[in-house]
Length: 207
Image 1 (tube, rainbow, N blue to C red):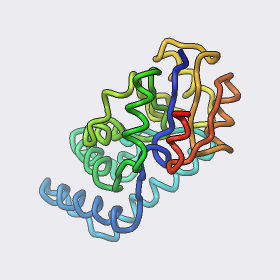
Image 2 (image 1 turned 90 degrees about the horizontal axis):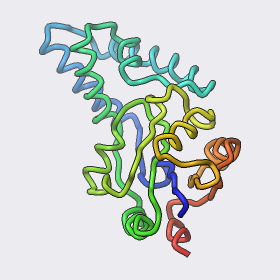
Image 3 (image 1 turned 135 degrees about the vertical axis):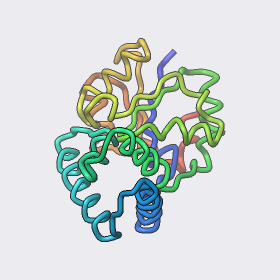
């Protein structure tokens, strides 16, 4: 029985980052800081956050992942308690999300025949929250996120850690993604079988 490893954002869930979601997170963060005696103007907050994100993105180009704690720390340089609160604010509020139409019915059928897992590039632990909101968390045996490993796809470390957690080998592992050039190339390089599929065609996995 093959172990199936899925990409998350862009395949199972539609994740939306835009100016509206970014402004929402900044506004909540600013209110929190003011309530704790830290006055930061809109301009200062956005400039500090933007500077941290630029450094983060530069490292991502080398397949290096930061945890959200490092991003927030780089942006604001505050104590651990406030940093952790801001991590939660940005993790839950800087994007919108919803599963694609075929995600739940297809996963439920696959879970009857295969162990399911997730390998995702993510700087925080929001995937479990998303799955819980839509009552799909129990469909997956393991979830491996890049912030836990320190590397993003296509770095081999994230695939190998996911297989280690699943207790399986490349020969018995299939990685499924909508991203050919990065995600599937990395999986293939560590010996996993790969399947290219788009969210509108997830049902093809049942054939």
